[in-house]
Length: 149
Image 1 (cartoon, rainbow, N blue to C red):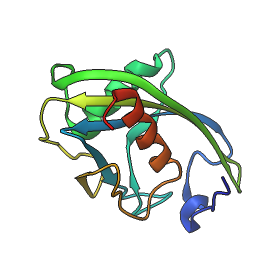
Image 2 (image 1 turned 120 degrees about the horizontal axis):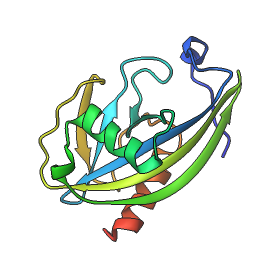
Image 3 (image 1 turned 30 degrees about the horizontal axis):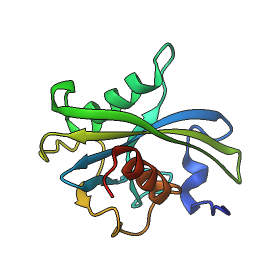
């Protein structure tokens, strides 16, 4: 997949580093939760919940932490979680990310937005644009793992 670098990539403090990132495709009643970014890179693009893996943190723990931090879903709200996919992307300016995507099914749709401009529930077949690279592929992998389609 040929990826294009966003204009604001040079503002990323993590440029020049290989970063392991966890993402979370959060589902409720067949819809997936996406967030609109409010900071570079990819300011204004839609993305999944997620963030960098912390030292001594296991991948699933990191995904659960991000789900709670970015959407307000506690462990009691999570009905099901499963590893969905692994992606790697490289962009110009030494931007290298390894994405570990997890699929979450939650018991309600009450989201507490903390780190984004907005969020919205979408049908996996009708995702908005623009999207951060691999979101469509991550959502499709999560749908498959959860057996939603």
